[in-house]
Image (cartoon, helix red, strand yellow):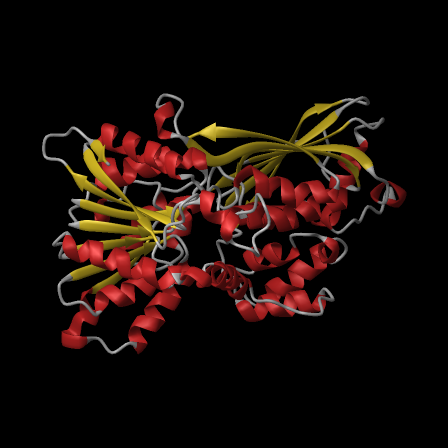
Length: 475
């Protein structure tokens, strides 16, 4: 993992005083997860660049912890040696600790002086929110942001884009402020920490973010991700930042779902949608069913009470949602031990997953509109190309109907996390492409009461896999 910091304020080699690292030396530091190396790729009065290289040892990390067999491979094969993450924050605090704290005994006035600085991260993961969230984090702090997204594999462009960006942040700012922004926000973008999060992390967040975080427009998301969505810790941090009303981020996400349900309540759409999908799955004769993007398990609970379904597997990218689904299933009394046949899996819908192959049917209830449009191709290949269930039942909003919702502003989506909403023609076009590419036949039905001008509020496609390989959309 490589981070460089460049300044052009003459004499630019003053950067060495601020970092407490001499430009003429290469220095190495032992860390618990590997080594850090500091050197200067250029050091002149006009321009000076300091580089921090992290050499993370994934094998050593795996040996430090106990794990189950299912986790073992992921510990050895991962992006930690290459991508910016919470390891970078640890390195900043241990290698550039004095600079991070704004201390420079030799030139104290320099430590308080805003400098023209450019920070460059060669591989910064933006796992949830992509470039848009990256910009929402750094631009309010005064940075000019340049982001170049990397493909998954340059030899196979059809695989789509990766979550990794090469990022340059440019601003006239104190070095201590730049380092504190990186210290807090890199783990927020990565959305993962390699160590246990406890109350100490609240103190770190407030210490390094207290001067700027309270006024940041994304402070709730920053606190939630930095603290691994531990509700009590998040509330504590936000309260300390002076927020009058503290909202748990998980509750905020649930509130967005509830807002969508209330918006659609006038047409009783939510329950009708679940009932219609349930009926379509029953009519298909399926016994083994996937609920992809299962969320908190509303469809799972409905399917679990139906003895036709011998195995029901819920899949979601949100660990928190899966925990809620599990708790709700545990509280539900299921007949004939059907609860033993319900399984929950953590996984992303845009990656091929052998665990999802061989099922009779799959349901996706209001899921695809939460995917970034560039990831739809990867989703199609993972579901229709690799998993290939016999039947796929998929619902998505009809954007034309949005004009009938009195409380929905023009141009806005029904849910804050929707990345798009399709018209009926756009949905039909997408279905036709899936069928032609992957050998399915699809039937598209309106879902909800049909308006003569704008159609039904939602739309459902039932895809049926063809033995011959050709595909079509039925009218």
